[in-house]
Length: 180
Image (tube, rainbow, N blue to C red; front, side, top):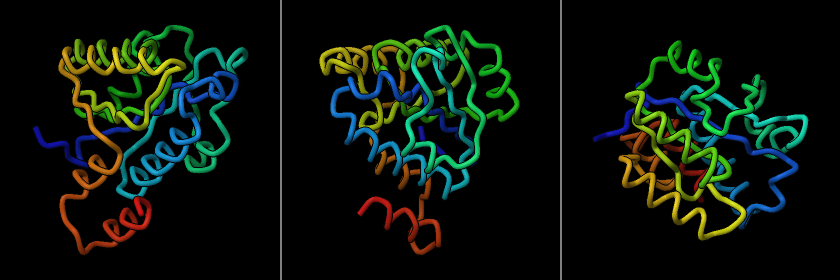
């Protein structure tokens, strides 16, 4: 199944400041996620940002806030984004099939969201090098489970070039600079 830019949305799940320092390889995760987000924006993919209990876990981390620019997050208390009515309403309004995901933690909020997205008829695309957990084994187990459930697992560079489809465009040149 080919993932297309006209039928995709990006979701940034709970990349929040108070939990983030404890996430496995969080510095690389920041770099990868920033490239993905910047690339999705360059291609014109709409983005949705969630925050889990902001009062306790803090805001989205500063480096990603800078790349995101102006946005309003969806506040949630449930682990799955799909248990938050505002998230479901946003997906319904944007009306895209493919949900490209970056976020934390892979084995909790990301996995539960992916399972619920599949049950709701969406095609979640988990960007493996843009998700993480506190413990690496938790991430690995969640990736395996999401793959079993039917999610597409990819990398940020593969995803961005699949969305582009062609070289020689301004978008291609911008993405090429990002991934170098």
